[in-house]
Image 1 (cartoon, rainbow, N blue to C red):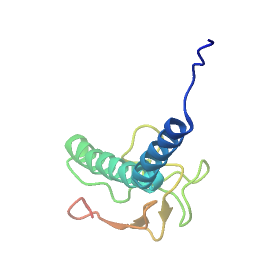
Image 2: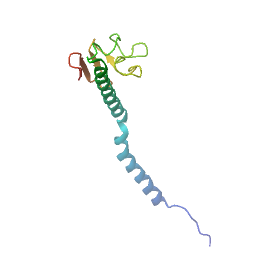
Image 3: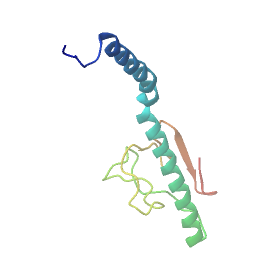
Image 4: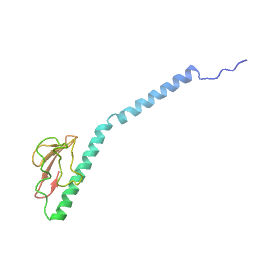
Length: 121
């Protein structure tokens, strides 16, 4: 007699059901990963700008009058933001300069720079 080896239909269905359950649990966890990454990147830039402000103060004994000479618009290669306080050439994407002292991050959070106190909140 010949012995057949392989999976039964019930075993195959159970594997498919288990894979489906894993997908249902895992997909929501990773679904919104891009917005979490943008939020983390925004916090990183804010920390870098604040650090740059205090480094500028340590060198010059005064806070910078402005964080950059960029025009009011989206930050880009031609219009880099935070060039006065960020050594790597400023921020070139995902940020918008709303006014001379107001910036909007990629998550939509607005930050205002106060040159009298060096606050960037």
